[in-house]
Image: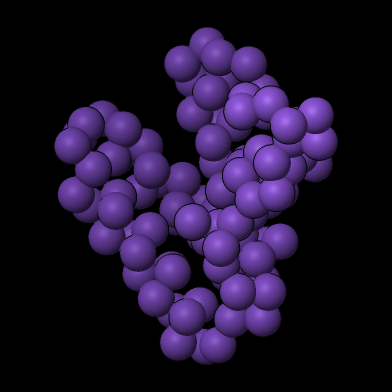
Length: 93
């Protein structure tokens, strides 16, 4: 989602994206995870002023979840390569 978000979103697009995450946190099927997300959104609301800001915010959020479930941390400097442009070596992952 963040990879296709506008570089310079309108005020409406920014508001819509913020609302999306708020609604997503209310309807996420795992109630424990949904509650965690709602708390995280209070602490660190979505950064929606640009594609880069949203991509980095979402990557940091993803990494917080990874830590909670014992997975590795993703290098947020590679979000565009992973989710928008594709890996330089042409691999799928």
